[in-house]
Image 1 (tube, rainbow, N blue to C red):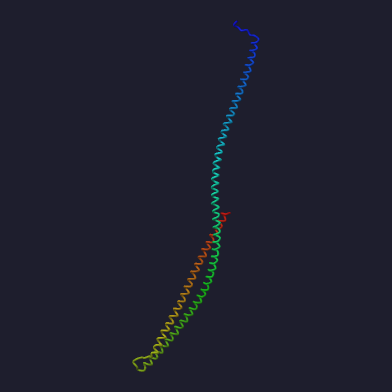
Image 2 (tube, one colour):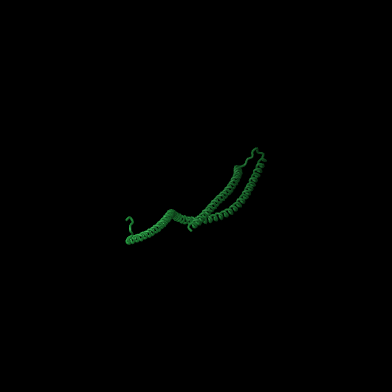
Length: 255
């Protein structure tokens, strides 16, 4: 009674249960395979996620670097704009300086030409003055010779007067008189001629010396004026060269 009799229905059920169990095993295998696939997918997704995270970090780092470069570029752009403003201002100032330099150069050139013309005139005046000085020296030498002749003739006249006086004295002394008497007219004539001769000689000498001094002073003044004009001409030429150099420098900057 303890042993159960296997009936056909039970065999069928058992067979059906085996089939179900086999089907469940297959489904289990399939589920395990699916789980393996899912695990593989999860690993792949995790790998892709990690890779994506690394790429994201790398992208963030690149973005940070780009932002830093962008900030630097903006700073350089601002500095460039500021420098451009300075350059524009400097260019404007240089243009104004160039115009002023050109005007000053023209003025300096005109002044230089004027100074050169005046220097040439002064040199001509010096030549004329040298000629006049030479003529004056010749006249002075002639005047000195004439003065010597006058002195010589006046000396001869005085000697003649002395001879006449001596003769008169001798003649009157021969008259056995204790005194030698000459007339007032003779006395004044002798004294007047002597004083007049000396005065004329002194005046001529003084006039000749004054003439020489005046000529020397005139020559000295002309030489000083010439030196001053030549110095001014040199300074004007130096200023003109400096202005030309500034002009060339300004043109180089503008180009």
